[in-house]
Image (cartoon, rainbow, N blue to C red; front, side, top):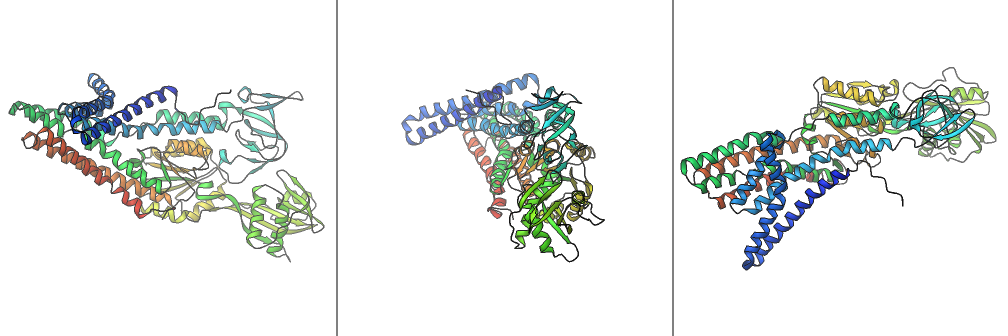
Length: 635
C-alpha cells in the first residue's frame, strides 16, 4: 500500500516525539495530581497515598524543567532563565510539601511554550502548500515528439505543451496557441489572462482552454513559484521570535529571590522563614500572567471566527503602524462584475445585456459568468445559444435570434467583419467586452473587480486605532489598482508586483522603523505574510497556503474583523501587562511578609495560590470583549 504523504506543515518525526513526550508527561502529571486530590478528599485514611500521588505528579512534570534549569545554570544561557526560576520554585514548593504548586508551575510554563512553538508550523505549511501547486510532470516537445519529464529537468529554451486543465510547469513565453489562463495565485490579478503568442506565463498557473506551446525561461527553483518557496524558507530561518514578557523579567527576579532568602536566613537563623520566602516567591502568578490572558483571548477569537496561530502576535499587533493589504480577494470581491453598460445608438441597455448573456450562457469564462449574473439581476431571461463556438483568448460566437452573434474583445469582432467604434480599447480601470448581432455592434460591457462593501469602514476604523499608513499592494494593473485604492483612501498604491517584490516592500517599511501588518489571501501573498511582523490570512477556509504563512487567519472574507483583531490584541496586551505588575507587586508583598515571619510555608503557599487566582480573575476581563461582540459575525 502506498504511504500517505504528510499533511502540509506536518511535524518531523523528532519534533513529534519530543512534543509527545512533553504532553504525555504533562497529562500523566495532571492525572496523578487529580488522583491524589480525590484520595485525600474522599478517603482521608488514604491521605498518605494521596500525598505520594501528588509527589509523583510533581516529579513527572518537573523533571524536564529541572534538567533544563540545571543546564541553564551551568551554561549561563539567558534563554533558560525561566527554567532556572521554575526549577528553584518547584524545589522550594516540594520542600514545603506543596506538591500541587510544584506540579502546576511547570505545567503553566509548558502551556506558554506550546503557544510559541505552534507559530513555526505556519511557514512550513505555507511552503508545503505552495509546492503542491507545482506541476508534477511536464510534456516536453522535442523533434516533433512528446515526452513526459520531471519539470526540474527542463532547461531554458526547451519547449513544452500544455493542454486545457493542465498546470504550466515552467516560467516562459507562449510560442503558439491561445488560452484563458488562471495565474491569479501567482500574479494576484483578478481576471483570468487571455494569453497568446508572446505572452508571459508562470509555473503553477492553469490553462483553462486551448493548447499552448511554451518556451521555458526557468524551471524548478528558477521559477517565480520556486523562488517563493526558497524565500519563505529564508524568512522562517531568519525571523527572531519576540521574547516573552515574563522571560525578560525572570533574569532579574531569580537573583532577587535568592538574595532575600539568603539574607532572611542569615539574620534570623530561621530556616522556616527562608523556605517561606522561596515558597511565596514561586513565579506561578508570573508564569500564568501571559498564558491566562492568551487563553481568554483565544476563546474570544474563536467566537469572532478568528484563528490565532501565534501568541506573540498579541504583543506585536498592538504596535502595528503600517497596514499593507493585497487587492484581489482581500479588499475586493475577487471576481469580475459588470460595472457599466454602454449600448450603441438605438440599442437599450437591457437589449445589450440580453444578447451578451445569451452568448455567455454556454461559457465558464469568469467574464461570461459576470454578464449572465448581471442579466439575471435585472430580471432578464437568459436562454441558451445555438451552435456556440468558443475561441480561447478571443471570444464567443453563436446563433442568436437566427443571426450570428459575438461576444469578445474589439479586435476579435473586427476580424469577424463587424464595424467597431474607434474607442474600442480596454478600460484602464477594468476590462471590456463588446457584443455584436449580425453585422451590427450593439455596444460594450465594462467589468471591474469591486471593493468589498465593508472595506472602507473597516480601514477607517483601523486608522482610528492608530494605524498611520495604509498601503494597497497588487499584481494587477496600475489603473485597476489606483481606482480601488483611491476609493478606499489608501496612502500608497503599488501595482504590477510579483511575490518577491511584495516581500521587498514589507522589508522596506520595516527598514523605515515601522511595524507591518500584511493582509492577503493567496499564494502570491505568502512571502509577504511570512515576512511581516504580523501576517493575517483572510478567507482562510478556502486557502490553506495563505493560512500557513500567517500568524492569524480570518475565517471568512469580512474585513470588519481586522479592527476587532487589533482591539482584541490591545485588550489582551493591556491585561497581560496588568497581570505582570499585579503578580510582581503581590510577590514582593508576600516576600516581605514571609521574611518578617508573618507567613509560614503553608500559609505562604495558600497566599501564593490566592495571588494566582487574582491574576486569573483579571485575565477573565478579556472575555468581556468577546461577550460584547458574541455572535455569528462581526460587529
